[in-house]
Length: 312
Image (cartoon, rainbow, N blue to C red; front, top):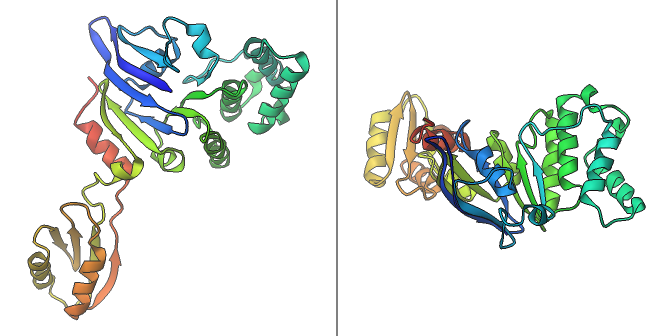
């Protein structure tokens, strides 16, 4: 597995990563989230050996990255933020160059087969003969993903893998990551919260260099104050204050908010309450024009958590 053990990084007197620890095992896709400057990219660079921690250590399969950087990278695929590419090379030349570095124990024929496979997988075979400096940002990003997975690594660390891609291309990358997730441990950084729902089975949120959440997406969503709540839109003949009072009496632990013939009932413990409220409304013979479930969006939970831990 990939392990971060009390990783800490200082730049001068400024602590940008503050005693961060976590493990990621094969089969997990970890979304590593945080506002700009929170320490995400720095943590990823320490995990891959591109930066030395001020204290703590990173391990791949139990081996310290700092003691065997070359050996641990054999099992690791890495797409850095704004990944550097040799722009004067064609796409085919660049992928072949990476193959010669990564696949030193393979025959030339096997290396070529690996190149062909990964270019088809990442849909860059159509631009194989173009120089990288002529590519769009989306195609450049796909070339970056291709070099990261060329050697079929057990571990993938991807910093903003869908950055610059159009919606169709994003969907392709998501499908690719999902296909690989069964046998690999994957860490991906993203600013796009929908990526978490689409790809991740675990989320870490980092802010001001510290981990402030480490949960499943569903557990994180339950932190939303409106999770499992219900909103009733009352018919005009009903008195909303009377209905609110009845609801508060029937559900004393719930929070009941009333505004312009709309009543919001939010359970204190985030347990499902909607069906009970609707049954109570039916028994009370209230005419309900419509009912809605408030959207417990991950981006709102993210903003609430990170606002309490601003980047200095």
